[in-house]
Length: 121
Image (cartoon, rainbow, N blue to C red):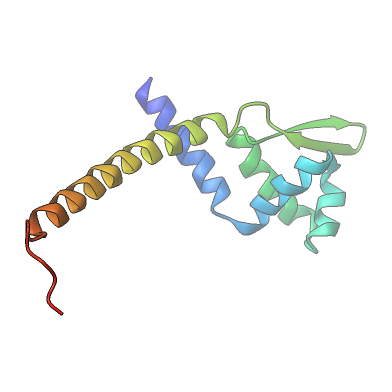
């Protein structure tokens, strides 16, 4: 089970590492689109866009449906869930560590304050 989740995360983050693929996801967030439409919007060949869509599809971030000669792309249903959960777990971990560091710094500041002494003028 752990290996499966790691493979899903690896595929998702690898797919998201490319600016064009992130752009495709943003575009599909607005509306479904054919590979031809996407290729035109990103000024690339059909073959190049098919490769990008294939990577996104393997990661579960995009689904495609072929009707006749047109392959329509849409956002995947749960492709980002695993990645978002992983990021949130690590965000909470780091937030707790930074809170502990803030508390330590405040404690050290309190210890450094001279008790009962007046300020020099």
